[in-house]
Amino acid sequence: MPDKVVTLETVSGMLEAEILRAMLESFGIQAILLGESAATACGLGVGPMAEVDIRVREIQLEKARQVLTDYRSGKLSSPD
Image 1: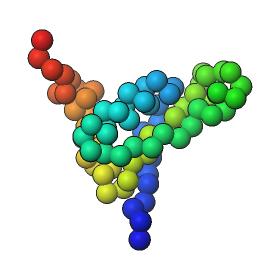
Image 2: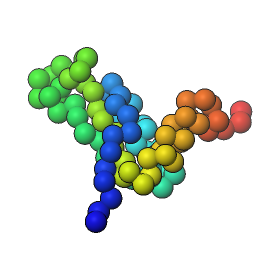
Image 3: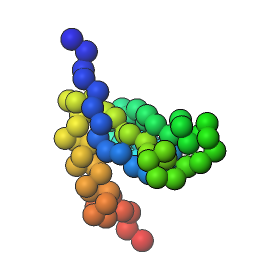
């Protein structure tokens, strides 16, 4: 049975989603982005129309959550 894909987080905008996807993939976590197609079609990218789901395999969900937690707490920052 294939791994189930689940939503890790929903963010506002493709730019943030792409940054987080690249970071997750640098930790070996495959991420898929879904959304913002309505914003692209309408030329309007605000509110719910700009939301993008970041999806990961369910077996990598906890690791992905930890990566985002570490990122947001500054644990992944490089020393100056």
